Image (cartoon, rainbow, N blue to C red; front, side):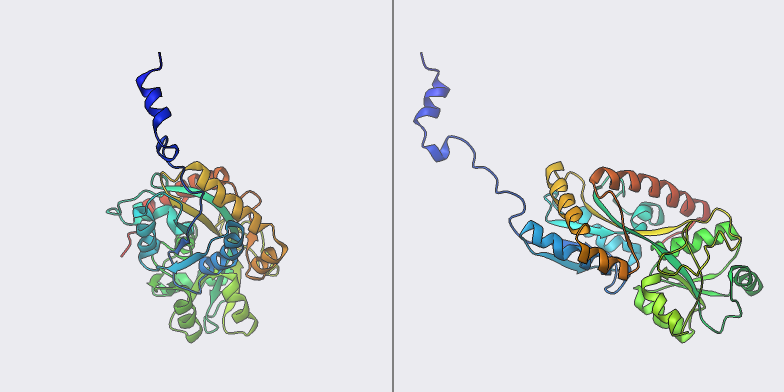
Length: 322
């Protein structure tokens, strides 16, 4: 005897016998949120990488710059988005401390965002306005101490990677300065060259041309090893700040709950983009290095390490976003 359910299934029209299969991902444009103003390093990296990713995926990827509040404005957009792969974010170091800098922030960088791909890493440059009477790390630290906290430090925002790099210098070198936050890196750089702020710690991509024109004075890089772009600059550790090591980086995130197969599709598109010689050349010209492993697993391991490092710094120094 045929069971009633089987009989009904056999008699039902073919199109109603089972749910229609979902269309393959992606089948519409993908929104890419960059939580910084246009023109900064994360924005530059995103635009270089997203273009070939879109070609691989066969759908447009539209970048939206949502800067401000230490990258939390853009992160809120992504955190609230449906976990379907159609809203993603290219974030940086500031992503790791959102919930510590802003205690009322509703999302955790680890719990509420799904790592997709680690893209690039690069050192920052410590750059001074030429009027500052310092030519190397020891003389700069001595000058900062003589200013008793009145030296002005320009940054793209509280909690931005450049700001955290400076706070690590504050902790390890025992110096003080006044933080002047801007809505984006280009505005801060403009005020540095004009002498309205005394120093910055930011992208070698933006600062190297200004160094070549003697509009700013670079004295060190922030990573443990020297920069391949600016090999003549010593590291801060070489200059006497023992244990200093800070790299800027960019990674893709999706909302938590985004299916693993969608994250894998995005990661594979990013990996393919990062292996294209033209993309590598453009990234290197921008002063960044391609990370060797672009998998979601590598991105997750990196995020865990960076959250532990920078969250502890923010808690220790009692830094709060504004």
